[in-house]
Amino acid sequence: YNSDIYADDLPYWNTKFGRPLLIIPYSLDNNDMRFAQSLEGERFYQYLKDTFDCLYQEGASAPKMMSIGLHCRIVGRPGRALGLAKFLDYVQSFKQEAWVCRRI
Image: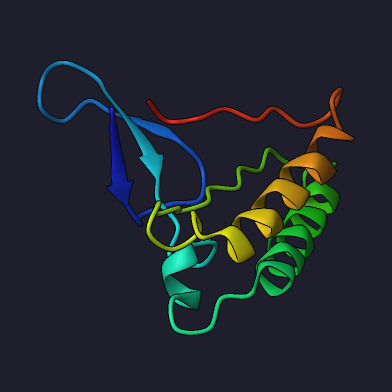
């Protein structure tokens, strides 16, 4: 798979080069790098929550995906990590409707 592309909001298969390659969009919008200079945990949480809530509403009529770009040196700081943890707890309250996966 390739997860370093900004060409779409939803995953898709690229079959142009023989073997199919899964393209998973990467987000600059929901990315801790945007907040590198002034990322407070609560502000990052609120931004992610607002994005999720909007996509959740839109998802009633069409599939949606929310990708979050995280870097250990940015969001991994104690004051910032709590905002991410709070967001993950919030999304887990939508267990039946939202699927959380990780890139490994």
